[in-house]
Image 1 (cartoon, rainbow, N blue to C red):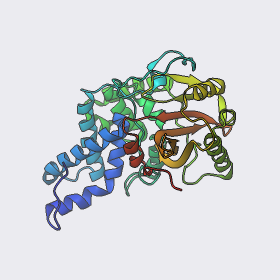
Image 2 (cartoon, rainbow, N blue to C red; image 1 turned 30 degrees about the vertical axis):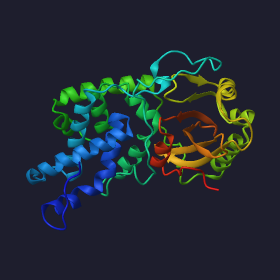
Image 3 (tube, rainbow, N blue to C red; image 1 turned 180 degrees about the horizontal axis):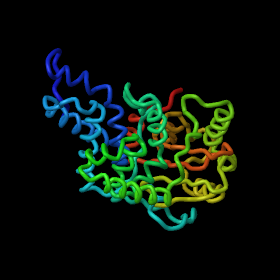
Length: 340
């Protein structure tokens, strides 16, 4: 449900005061929840709660801070009745044997990709420039996956302190705990995060401003898939690269294993069976992969989100499958069939 709007009066005042922060609130809810669909729903709930309380807003905090406080508590309430959203590699255990049968688990609420470009994940117009940079880094898939290891209150405190740069007293007021509790929660959250996640990496390429080397690498990556040249595909991976594809439960490490997985399970048989179309997910390079069907038509198959190592090679691919792949692709502005 959305807040009512009119051409004048309090509703218009509310809209003008709060709408510039909507994209930022969606991103905040996504960090908390790990689900784009949940983030959109909880943003709607946040704006409805804010609209109902707008006549009591006293201006002691900025509208942006006020909205984030409401959104944080809305998410904390939702998290009380939901499970964490992992990737397969976050479930624990060793990498899988690529020759084993693939298994799916639709009972696990898997981490979802976030449909956004760089502008959409940027904060509102009055945000500190340092936060703009941090916000973009903190929407990346690896960081969101790492956040899923944290209990909900630790997660909220870490996001508000380390991503948004709030003071401990501001966080304490937002989540209704003492400053000492905030500092304790933050310390534990940082320790847990450092054990399960790499440092946020600002060197990951901006998908809308790629340098020549990255463009050349990605051109080769696309060409290798579209030729169905598995050797060429695996040559672009680092030695410890990871491939995973929720809702399939397995994760696979190293070019040899990834190559065996593709050869043994990919429906493609020859050049032209697959087509890749670029998009952006979590502020990262991503591709919609279209697979040819028995009727000769290419249709949505999987959404690949890529990460790169410092040597320019691909270090991680999460290939998202969905019950309704066409709907998943539409969320990322990908057409129902690839352009001619």
